[in-house]
Length: 258
Picture 1 (tube, one colour):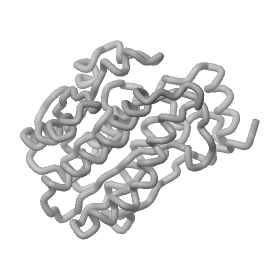
Picture 2 (picture 1 turned 90 degrees about the vertical axis):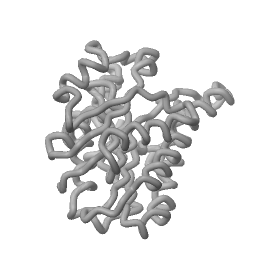
Picture 3 (picture 1 turned 30 degrees about the horizontal axis):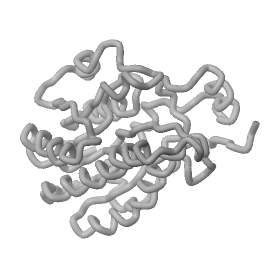
Picture 4 (picture 1 turned 180 degrees about the vertical axis):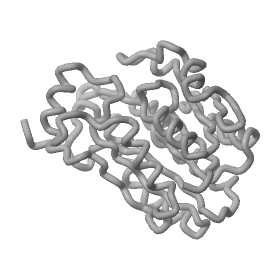
């Protein structure tokens, strides 16, 4: 991979995909501006990282000429532009944007509320679109081209009736991938989307881990590092002709298997 300068969102837990992406990019020689919002993790069953965000950054080598960080609540309408400004103030123009952040929202149809739908939409979709907009505004042509990578889930492959707000917003990002790629292709920026499949980030119960594991040919969930590897592939020069695609990196997940 050519040396890149990237903004990566959702880098708040060492078990998370965002952390693995930041780790992989740094190892590949990139400069990384990491976004986190630990107060959200603290409200969820998996909890915030025990080391805190300073410990997370320390495990990545600490703030340096290659790594910088900002906490940002992407539910706030102004947060995407402020985050992009902070990243460019620190590193100059960016050529890579990896949108890994997400609000994980459970909710069946009878449980839906307007407030939860609005909040999930604001974080997962509105913030993503505004970040892509801000990225495009600051982008300057580079020999290795610009890259945007989104993240979706498996809602296009099987129903997710227990988490309708989440499935709705991830479906929107899935469908926006082709449209955003068309909007940016003349600028030399590719836009692709990754569905990482069942990934062990510490959120699943032991029962669910065993159940899903039986439907994965390897007998185990995918790892965050494997998701980061797919991102790294899309950032490489060999992927310069790939745009508008949703990559299902599910390791043969057999949803039909009980």
